[in-house]
Length: 335
Image (tube, rainbow, N blue to C red; front, side, top):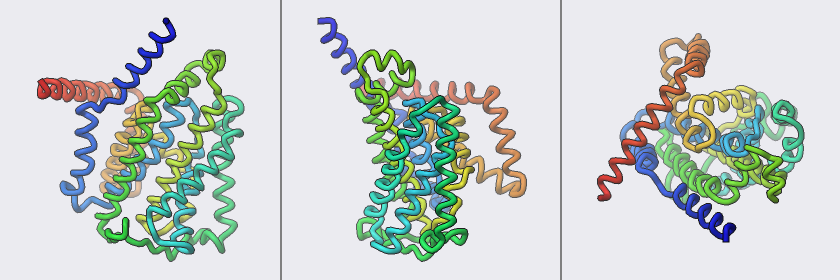
């Protein structure tokens, strides 16, 4: 009887967690409305959408499974090169290339997951960084396939769904990237608010207790790591398709480092942290680079130091307060 009551409460809690809040609806409506509101900044918005998907991929393992990574760029690069090579040698359909990029990155995540699940957080940091460095050197060495230091050139993309051609202004690119982000976000939201997501958080909080309760820790973490890799591969595929160029930069360490900064700004463990962090990071980067193109890294570093020392609590508190007001307004309108 107690077990049935507990199961019913868990299902009820998951049902409540899956419900959409007014703040979430407003966030996505604004994201799609940005296409009309900022027609001159669509290329920047496309970069934000891709970075947000990349951050979402890391949040799935860092925020929900407790797996730290300093080499997440490995999956971004794998997805980018897989999609780029597919478009160049097989077919120019963007959706097919997206699937190929996700599949190859997910396969890499599955193959390397046994290595990542061993040892402590420090060991995982070194292993993930090592995998990214190995892929970087392989991409540089096999220049006949990847283009090496010159990059993979000659990528030509067909229209999305056979209807929407890519243009230099980023109109199709932004809507395409944002739509992919939205669909994959829906999947991630469903996953984290499911029994599988609850088991991941149980493993993250206390792996010994979760194992004693019958949770297959290794399989859960391997599945989460593979899913995260596939999401990062999708971000890489979008980057290759919308720019029609892939270079060694997608495998560089700074990609993984920037990703950690994005999650530091937005916060990990609630999906929207990566999205909000990506928006803040790219806008800040673009703004500072406009005024001081030579020293923008210094100012971003200074901002992050001040943010970590005390600004994060203020910003997150204001964001929660705003979300609470929107929720109360939504309830009032429903009545």
